[in-house]
Image (cartoon, rainbow over all chains, first blue to last red):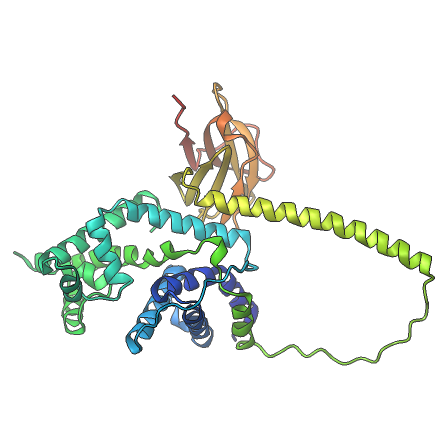
Length: 165
Length: 234
């Protein structure tokens, strides 16, 4: 049986992450809120979809894929809304850990050379294939593949050193 | 070139969902029969999976409170408040009593407001410390120790489960001392704990945590779970 209180706890703990990803990919408040709502409705309607592992990573990937669907389905309109400054009611604990996670991952990303990091971000947050990245950046296809592999391996090593992943 | 060399670049692309569908199918078919490539793929996929975590928002850009209301409205029926007949007040307070009651209520509300304001300020400071550019992060078993200004935090997300009758205890090593001083004890909830040590970071040389009996110990009685040495200032 689904538990609304447990669901609310999941929302309180992860909504900033989901909304943050959506804002990063869509750059628009209303679109980010729509995606956030759709993601949490998916969590509610299919609680068995998450099987094992890191829940934050799982819900992050769902959000990213949902955003890419949105971007693919319709032409992106320029942002016409201001990001609202709203203080949410989440606990300091959840916020603090989200910040620690963000800082740790960002620190790990910062240790990757920019030419590798930018290609990883185009692939992951831009939803581009390696061929599309090569076309867009003018970097040879083989170099794109090598840089992405090397960069991701370095990210993994940095996360290991931070005892994160 | 062996089979692994052929796929080595593709594993990272697959982990990032950056392969066209037909190539992704080809790589997955290889993974189904290659343990070495599967192990490497899992490592890279785990790294890719945490990329979104870097997208956490600054405090000022949270989603609206209305969004939560909309979402929760979709998962639970609206609470229906039963209608009840209004009762006639059985006692009507005289004006002077009402005025006194209002004064007491105002004093209490003022004190509560000050308390809540202090608490909110403390919480904001904690959150700001988590991503302070000057903060130093030290990876430890199950989490990290963070030093920001004169504050020291222990943040554990995957603290090892404690044996029955045991707690974690933090220790600090005062500058110039060779003897650990006992600090707080704590029990993580579902492996998570975030606490600020009651100590001035500038006055200590190290932080450690050990497993101790409930109530804590005067000196560590077990091998530390971790020890973090702070670099001494030049």
